Amino acid sequence: MLLRAERRSIAAAILLIVAFCLPAAAQERRGTYTPPPADAIHAVVAEHGMVVTQERIAAGIGADVLRRGGNAVDAAVATGFAMAVTYPRAGNIGGGGFMVIHSADKHEDVAIDYRETAPAATKPDIFLGADGKPDIAKSRDSALGVGVPGTVAGLTLALEKYGSGKFTLGELLQPAIELARNGLALADDMADTLPAIYPRLAHWPATARIFSRADGSPLREGDALVQKDLAATLGAIAEQGSRGFYEGPIAEKLAKAVRDAGGIMTPDDLKSYSAVIRAPVRGNYRGYDILSMPLPSSGGVVLVEMLNILEGFPLADMKQGSAPELHVLIEAMKRAYADRARYLGDPAFVNAPVVALTSKDYAAKQRASIDLDRATPWTDALSAVPPREGSNTTHFSVVDSLGNAVSNTYTLNFPYGVGLVAEGTGVLLNNELDDFTAAPGASNAFGLVGFEANLPGPGKRPLSSMSPTIVLKDGKPVLVTGSPGGSRIISTVLQVIVNVLDYHMDVAAAVAAPRLHHQWLPDEVRIERGFSEDTLAGLKAMGHQLIEPMGQTSANSIAVTPNGLLGAPDPRTRGAEAAGQ
Ligand code: DON
Figure (cartoon, protein in one colour):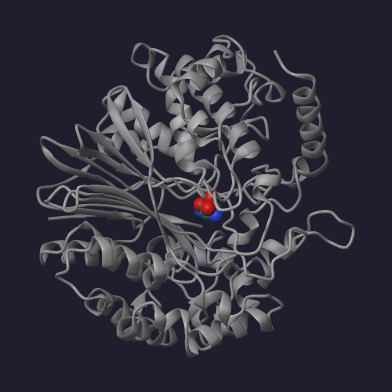
């Protein structure tokens, strides 16, 4: 039964959403993936260690660290810095992200939050135009959208606390420095995507110098990408640790570039940035433990809420990829994404009801509202009884021979972030602050609606969907997964987990299988190609609106099995690699 005040607030929420979000739901149009034939899908097998990334050189660098006796965190740090050079579309030191670690060495599970923060001068109306309405150019295409970068603080903190101690930061940075200084040949996904994104980059002279040929056209497959300033910046980090980035000449240059471009980040914002060690969100699904990212990512909360709802359905008795299975997945997504919009934000600013949202009791109530034959309208998917309580991205997975596991997702938000390389540093800057909600009911670039909990504020971290996740059985990792894809990240991780745990699919098949996505609003199911005609007809008959394409995701995953480590680079992007040993 809804209280009258509840009904009023839901009605107000709906009015705001209709006013702001529906026209602004600018989804990424890429992502016309069609799954390869079943006999072409193979996991890569290794015995001692595995790194699966979206870019092959960086995977090899991580695997080499494992070969030389490093643990999964050492390898993740080397891979993370390398991808800032080899995969500048999303690998970065000018953005931020999250790392979930199962440390067998320390008997600890932790989440490292290195999300970008809003500069101290940020006001809640920073992304509104003169008419008081959201101005998306401010958060997406201007330096106002640049958050204080967190990657350098996050990776150095991970190494200091959870590295093996066998490698210095400088040693792990060395391959990245050499690749930046000497150049690498443009290949794979970077070669596929650079021409389309180039006009956005060419807008900034310091960026154009790096990504252009002498004739002013974009670099092409096989051309050398040389990043000398970035090599020097990485060299300063190697020598001085994170201080080399957050203080002194590099910090001055980063802040100057942002301010010259009309932003508000200062050297003090950089100096006061810190990465945070948090307790992961924990769930339990059919006897497996789920470890995922807590706030300021919505990923863990939304994932566990969806899994809890699904646990009450006999998924194993429904055919994988059939309309009955996908219907309950969609309904679980709709409800959990509605809660995301309504309740979640930076925990330093918002008292979100995380315990209630991730409880089995709450999931049982949500489950009871699902009609097995009909799609629930989005207006009914706002939680009926609110829980009461005292309170262009890339993913890589690493497992070592000692049972340590790292699940890392980091991002600049858009491909190549805001597109601005800070003059003299080689650092591409993010536009992460677009993940804030510009005004209650407005949506971000991924069409995600939000309310007060996610308004901009000084020092605040924008709500994320990045969901690096580790699944444990009896305290040992069995699956490491995560993905890029904005709003689609959490539903992607859900489907990989369900495919592995409910359907016992080989991890490569689980990752390659077609996926779909519902995020409450817009009230539509985004689908990839590859579902059967029967499935699509069944979903339509239940009232689901199906729309192609779904948009890009890439769930580079590892399964730990009695037959060894199985690496599954996602076939959706060219160049994804599993490097085992
Ligand atoms: O943190 C988030 O949820 C977004 N900034 C992630 C962006 C993303 O995944 C873009 N990649 N496709």
